[in-house]
Amino acid sequence: MDMNEKMLGRIKKSITHAMKGVFYGEHFKGIDPAGIKDRADFEKLPFTEKADLRDAYPLGLLAVDEEKVVRIHSSSGTTGQAVIIPYTQKDVDDWALMFSRCYKTAGVTALDRVHITPGYGLWTAGIGFQLGAELLGAMTIPMGPGNTDKQLKMMEDLKSTVLCATSSYALLLAEEIERRGIRNKIHLKKSLIGSERWGEKMRQRIAAELGVELYDIYGLTEIYGPGIGISCRCNSGMHMWTDYLYYEIINPKTGEQAAAGETGELVITTLEKEGAPLIRYRTHDLTRELPGPCECGLDFPRIDTLIGRSDDMVKVKGAMIYPSRVDEVLSGIAGVSSEYQIQIDHLNGRDILNLLFETGVADPAGMKALEKTVEAAFKEKIGITPEAKAVGMMELPRSEKKSTRIFDNRY
Image (cartoon, rainbow, N blue to C red):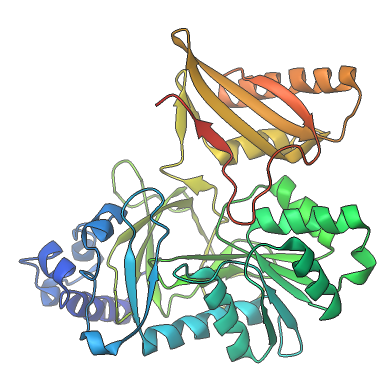
């Protein structure tokens, strides 16, 4: 995105504040923010990586006096040391304001009833959805994850109109509503989906089976949480709240700025964060900047729907495999569902890729033909032939949180 003089001033102010903390005091040691005169100078600053945040555990990121901290959030820590993010009251209020803006962008009003299924606790999801809805003035139903029977009962009895969920759980709920034949008892009109990348076929299934308008909501624990950006009614990328953050899109291999319109890795600098400001934080999310104004009239720049992460690629027999590419291949094959699972193993000195996919086709001959079609399309588009296996609908596991689709068992 563009960096004018006003934006540069705000970035320098954030850097100065960040350097009050232990981590950035060391990370930017010898750097004088006043000496950053333009965008080129800013881009000479070192990136901040997730590993840096883990090394700063527990409160190395803290840039204010401890008595100003009103809340702690944290990453899950499932892939290493958890990351601790302290929030001041201003941070909490700013996050609620951004989230409220997300709801308004999706057309949600104070007359809506917002059904929240993401998790609560140290994770940023559930409470972020709740604070934004409450600030908007909507009736908020803080269900949290799990207990699908109770979710559907509350959805019916309270006539929920907005569903907040991961794409995996939204699909699980949609399938359960269809299975129970209670679609006519459900009053949902919109759904805000976040926390994981999802393919077009999955999107179409959720929208059709729930009968809702879908909106992609973006965020990550390190940068407030979900709510720093959202898609609009035009469904053309996600608007980013650039009064609270500055973003770059870089080549993930070289670290250089990506060319205009080129897919790269999203890097974020916070502008207003007090508790744990972040400068040039590599999100590892892959996207591209969309040019020009949006037809919806919202005056905030847009990034494209995420296609994956720079660190979720696996390499098999020389072929690079991203979940987004698998989604793309399967979405073009009639009879193949959105749900799949890949298992990669190393047997007898060679790599084996098994691809299980769901289908509504029931006869054995039809399933066998579909397997051959999937294998051929995978070979053509991705460069490797999998051992494809068709399974019936609902046979692959469902998740109340994020779904894992690729399992690399070689290591």
